[in-house]
Amino acid sequence: MSLVRSVLLRVPAAAAKPGPAIGQALGPLGVNMAEFVKQFNDATSSYKPNTPLPVKLSAFSDRTFSFVVQTPPTSELVKQAAGIKAGANRPGSEVVGYITPQAVYEIAKMKQRDETRSFYPLEGIAKSVVGTCNSMGVVVRDEVEEGEGEGEKGN
Image (tube, rainbow, N blue to C red; front, top):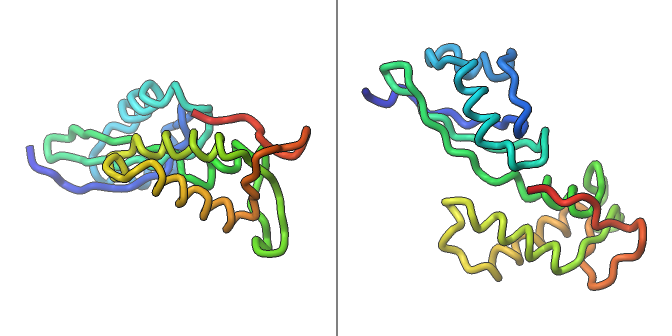
């Protein structure tokens, strides 16, 4: 059992389907798509459905596979927390939403669970989240008025 190849995918949480997007990536590797979809949907059932999740899949020569699900992209988590559909077209001069420092902290805690960030201090990850907010036109402030943001939070 040797590694054939590793691929990076972005798959919607708890809603993966054996369609062309996944098929084109997994078909040449000999991976059973139906089995991957079943295992992936079970593993991501705790996330908000359809949240795009980065997945690193390793395919082996005996047609088995393993995969690691990473946390959603920071921009997705910020959009969910601010209750917006997209970031600003002109981030420096346009504000599309607001989130609180508590929401930034929650996002940073979630991102710290990634194996690549597990050894980073929480403060550093939080600063990175604030940077993502700035580049999206989302303002971090203590008080968020009714209807200004703090939408649904993802998992």
